[in-house]
Length: 121
Image (cartoon, rainbow, N blue to C red; front, side):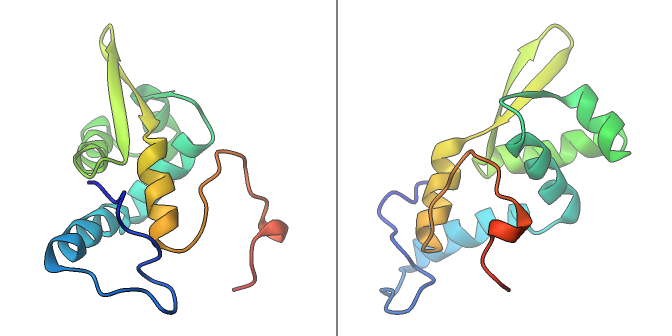
């Protein structure tokens, strides 16, 4: 997905998106619209790179289930993988998350955000 031309699509005063951009953006959000995939992204956000074997142990899901979720995240351009022996190691694609943050009118940072620092809901 390429969101480079999108700036603040979901903020007051945003310009109207064409159909192609709406479909691309919706597909990315759809990839994030599952609690297990959010958990995976959350775990990857705290690490530079993470072995799929650790995700299986930490999330309590089977390896095929984890692989399915990671495939969907990879297809959406949210994560990337590299093989090392029999295991795959995953990491977030920072440019994709930076673009998504811009689309939503914010900024992406790799530094952890504590709950009390976040904006009120």
